[in-house]
Image (tube, rainbow, N blue to C red; front, side, top):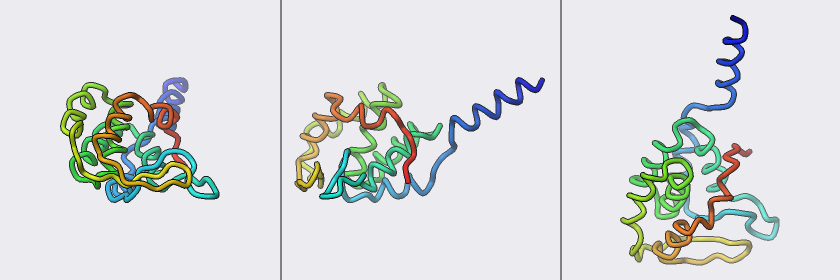
Length: 140
């Protein structure tokens, strides 16, 4: 009997419920960036929020919501998240963005740029960001 209680408690520690603050932060994020940015190589607020959403048991639903309500940058994070958490949903949703000319503010290292969403989405579709989200560990 104590073993079943331990398993339930252990499962509760592994999965987390919805992180409303992370979902709201990610939906409003103004910059799409994975990896260290700026001179200090800090983790972007978007990547922190992305990892916090990714680590919950509601991640797929939350990414689908962000895809519909978020900034263009948030939509890119949401596509990365769906690719990792719900591949069939990603395969369906990515089609809507494949030819989008909407501008996405991006950053890689110290280089800020605006790219057409279709270009960012092509890289997401190729799996360029898959390794960035695999840990799914919340940060900060």
